[in-house]
Amino acid sequence: MDTGDTAWVMVSAALVLLMTPGLALFYGGMVRAKSVLNMMMMSFGALALISVLWVLYGYSIAFGDSVAGAGLLGDPTQFLGLDGLIGTGTGEDDLGVATHLVGTVPAAAFVAFQAVFAIITVALISGAIADRARFGTWMLFAGIWATVVYFPVAHWVFSFDGVTAGEGSTGGWIANRLAAVDFAGGTAVHINAGAAGLALALVLGRRIGFGRDPMRPHNLPLVMIGAGLLWFGWFGFNAGSAVAANGTAAVAWVNTMAATGAAALGWLLTERIRNGHATSLGAASGIVSGLVAVTPACSSLNPVGSIVLGLVAGVLCALAVGLKYRFGYDDSLDVVGVHLVGGLVGTIGVGFLATADAPAGVDGLLYGGGADQLLRQVVGAFAVLAFSFLVTYLIGTVLQRTVGFRLEADDEISGIDLAAHAEAGYDLVPVTGGGFRPGTGAGAGTSSTTEQEVRA
Image (cartoon, rainbow, N blue to C red; front, side):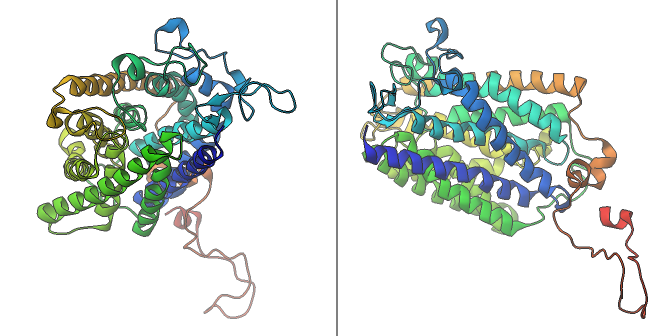
């Protein structure tokens, strides 16, 4: 065990955990005022639920020895309840307790780091169905989706032979057989969540008034704060994926910074040319698009390549968010335009911009590597996209037809915060229960504010 590596992984896990509250602020500011609490609760609900499922069986499905060596699913019973993974080193510790390492860090540290990836991936999906999903059904969906989609896909992408499940174990097919490069989750996190968001948006249908009524963000400062927290936490997301405090982590850190800045500039430039204004919402969205794109590529590019990748991602994602109006699907907060498109740009971009001088050690098409790595990247990206979309569509359809997923029309109009949580995000209408009111004179006055006015 290396204490420096362990410290870095634990700090990185904390940084990535902070990203889910950051996402809650980012998404919460983007919806209308009547939906802010529900939007944030969808992220916090995912945080609570996936934390438990990950410990019970999620880690085992993602990082257990592949069932029958097929690379599709980890053994769900191998680390059930994290059995055998609690400790600080190999063999037995001073108390005679069997312990386990992943690389140079305790398995428990690796469990913690990967748990927060699972949490935020589920939370990302919620932005596609903002304003119109029942909270209880969302929680049910989150548990099912994590179990049958995220945990297996994490096994495909992140589980390497002979590492997390012991010497001689078999990992996932994308990581080992296909050998596509996905350093920190372009496929398993962003393409996965983006495809799922598109599927759910189609299942639930469009919001009432979509394309007709203004649905502007109600609190842009919240959006900017959320984007800042996401950018801050993402250094743990990417650099922490080295699972060591080493040169690979440093390269991932620098590439993350460069690509994100370039993407924000690319988005703002696109807005300025197209609309005549560079907006704060565009800056925040550009930041996230760059973070998404560089996630799979941060170990395989040099800093200049990262700038190119970020610039392309910022421009393409800025253009992609308008596709929902052209094709008529209601992706409320642009999960498809940012995460699916950004994830595809980053994952496939490795096939063009990767250089063997970077830690991943592969050359892309533009560095003389031919089309081999590009083909691997395309196959990995679209395999995850197709699997996630089809399975999510099935899950969402079954839930809609059984317990009901879409909110009732009256509740959607009046506001999901009151309907689902009996709360309002902002207490802007004072309600008094008695006493003096200005202009009424002395005496026992009562509030003239009606329930209908409060709901409005």
